Image 1 (cartoon, rainbow, N blue to C red):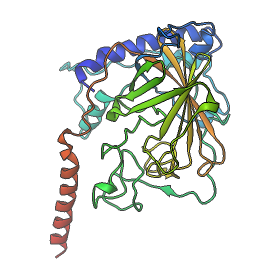
Image 2 (cartoon, one colour; image 1 turned 90 degrees about the vertical axis):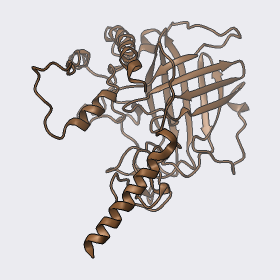
Image 3 (tube, helix red, strand yellow; image 1 turned 45 degrees about the horizontal axis):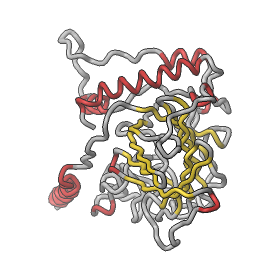
Image 4 (cartoon, rainbow, N blue to C red; image 1 turned 180 degrees about the horizontal axis):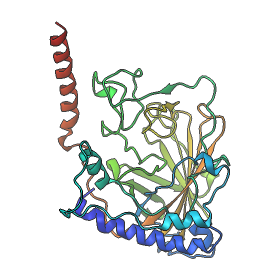
Length: 358
């Protein structure tokens, strides 16, 4: 993301989401959608709800619920007050401030890019709302789990299904899908909030919706049908990284059903290293719901049904906020030469190690 654009953009997100959150604080901690159940949003000239614009799904709510919350779905008043407390002031370069400790330069660089937005408009304890405990379901017996690494050790056999990490350094096929600029590590589908580039633009006409994420510029072209019964899927032999999406309107909610994922991605997620990634997306059916519940908020709900990987389906809810800005070019790595240099560096390290051993 363009750094000069980032600061005012994030301030606008925070202001919009925080203002919605304050409304919710007085409405039983429900989502902004519940606080505005009777909201009648703008319509397109052909009569459909207008979801068009640039939106952010940035969030600091955890995907899975921390254990100490148990089955509690929403924060209490004390926790909401803490969540709304202003963040600490960042270093403004004042010479009187203490220097960074040794080894902290890289961390500070990352802090600059991280999107630390408000907690969102729902005050949930997790994005996962089903199962009721806020955790992913148990895995099916025998499901393969792939572990990733940032180092040189070989952790699994190809294909590498990790996104921001890999399974080795022998060749580009061992590196993560995001490192190879094939799949964005937050673009999904479904959207999964991460450290940056949590932006998406939605375009509409009467019979098509386009959902374009900023990361990797993944554009899903979603043909619209009259109802769920009318959906027509691709032939089963045609498989895609992001699946094949078809949609329909149910009242004022856009429902998008995605099938035909390939087997080259994990069933869900993709950033984990230590915990590993289970299964593949081959049998996954993803259902997403987009409901405009306020002037600047869409409730985004997703349900993953993958019986080959999980013992139950699971559902998450992520409020996404409208932003006053544009999508900017996502330069995955300039000229795609970073991959070449990473692998070349690995070969140099191997040669040095061989020379030392001899």
